[in-house]
Length: 139
Image: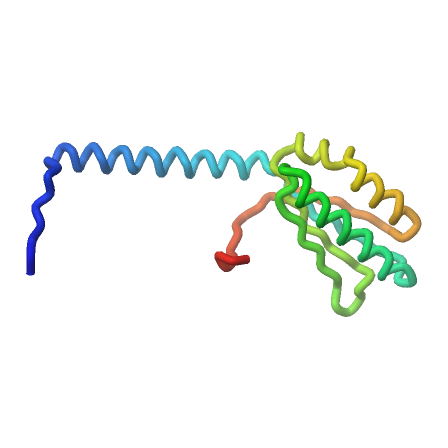
């Protein structure tokens, strides 16, 4: 077995390790601070079953547009209850309050609200704290 000698002294290694630890802490703290500023919301929506297809079309258009053109709109997941597809839950994540406030003033969001006005029977918005995320790297 070959042993390679390092050109760095013990003090240099120690300094390097301290720098790596500080950078790791800095970036971890930065990420945690960004997550603390995020607006994470659940929207629970009951849609008129007779208009569900039209509602889903309007929702998908609004979500796709928002994520593609607004840097502060980070995530949308919309799911429907299997036993009652007109009960929809949306997970929304915005970079911060300013991003959310900007989002609700956009033309595509206003178009969505106008389009679905007569379709939505009830809407409940709940602000939540993101506890954790686990997903495959390519998801």
